[in-house]
Image (cartoon, rainbow, N blue to C red):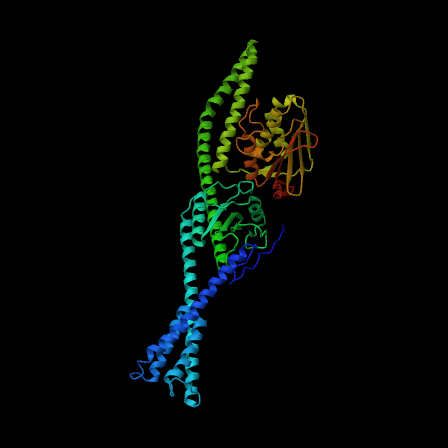
Length: 538
């Protein structure tokens, strides 16, 4: 196989022979053309003889000029029906017949006078010109009819394809139109999600395709098979369906006489059909994508509304439950009750549920776009310290390593939301790492901004799915005893992107996971001088 095989030029007037057995058919075609040509010239002889015999009785009633018109009319008729060659023959025969029969001396050729010579020359020239023009008009009329027929085929196919809504309809319409227009057998091959052409279903009367050749044609986006220089031994012609964005499939065409390829005009029209089919397939594809997107958007909107309403209704009773649990805990401690540990567990679970509800509500607000950033110049060290204080209880079982650059600048951000990002990342680290595993926070100044890393020495992230964890309701392990619904990292990404930053996840070389987010570095405003320092001492 050639990686870049050139497309062969098709012969305009002779059918290209591909196999030894096709010579017999070519000879039959030539014999048919010879018989038709012989019939044309025979007709010219008969017409010339008939006009001469018909004009002899009219000689006493018509002058020579009118008889010449009859001979010219015969030339026009033969040129219109049989073309240029028989028209030339009948023109020459008519001139000779006119000179032999109607010019004195009768029944003898007379070229001895200037008038007879002039009559012969003028009549011959006029006959040849009229025959030539008539034959040309006949040829142009045939070309016009052929073009009109091609335009009609294209119009009918485009009209039917414009109403197709799914790929199956495009396949049915395309195969039917191609077979009706070219008197061939056609089969449409479409790729799957991995760009591999699917095997067609077995249908009676359909050609047997070679999937290897079809895949070769699809991958290289060039025609192959019959009538080309690419794998010419194949019995089918394979055309790639080139759409504006990509190749959408392969059209396999099998002529009824498989040893013969299509003519140049047919091939040009078939290429146009292939472009129409490709555009229709691409339109159907993007229509399906648009429908799926609308369905997903509607489902996401309904889910966000449900989550917002549910989380808002659960927030008040959870807050009351946490407050009552803290009050009872203080009372039981004072009374030294044996149930204070159980009550402490109740309070911790209530706080965890409250955090989950807060995540649900925040996610719904972020998706609805109703959250406005309240930016101010903040110290990153204070935000990290505040997040660690909120998670003081879960962090007790993990050694904590902090590496904050002492030259960290102030960052312009929403302190509440960035604190939520740090809390979610640290809470994830405490949930998915065993007790005793180290958790660290690193912050430094990079070219693109301030970079913060939250890392651990736990089991790490699923390979190949690190970035998928930032999708809503996605967890590292679908079945896990660790509580959660998979919203924490999605909220982190939404918050960081709202600050024009970036966040990513990866596995550490020494083991464990690392979540890195970057916030853009801005220049803080200049400090205003203290007005009291400007006052002069008395």
